[in-house]
Amino acid sequence: MLAGHGAIRDIDTVAGTGRLARILLAPVFRGQGLGKEVTALLCTAAFDIVELNSLSLRVNQDNTAAISSFLACGFEFGASDAMRYRIGNEVLIVREMVLELAAWKESKPVWAKAMRKGEDCCDH
Image (cartoon, rainbow, N blue to C red):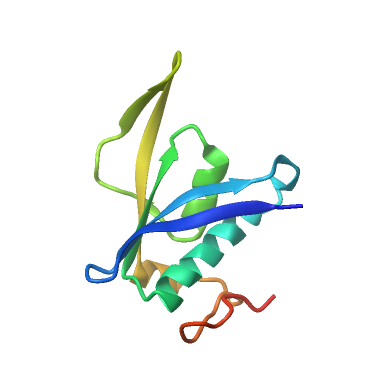
C-alpha cells in the first residue's frame, strides 16, 4: 500500500530554488508524524542531493496538520499575500511557505542525510 507521495518541482539549478508539491498521505497513515517525515525526505533530496538554496510550497491555510509538519521542518510563512482559489462553491485560501538552506540545516533530523548525488536520503 502506498503511504504517501510528494514531489519537488520547478527546480531552477541556476537560482538554486525549487517548490514542494503534491504532498499527500493516505488517510490510514495520518496523525502519526509521517507528514513531517515525508517533508523531511523531500527536503533532504532537494538540499543535499540537488543542492538547492531554498524551497517553497503552497498550503491551504486551514490545513493545520500540514502546516504543523512544514513548520517542524523549518518552513516559515512567506511575505506574499494569501491566494484565493474557487473550486466549485468552495473558496480555498492558500499561503506560501519558504525554507532556506540555513534554516533546514538547523531543523534537519539526524537520520536525514545524503552526502552526494545518487545516495539514498535516509538512514532508517
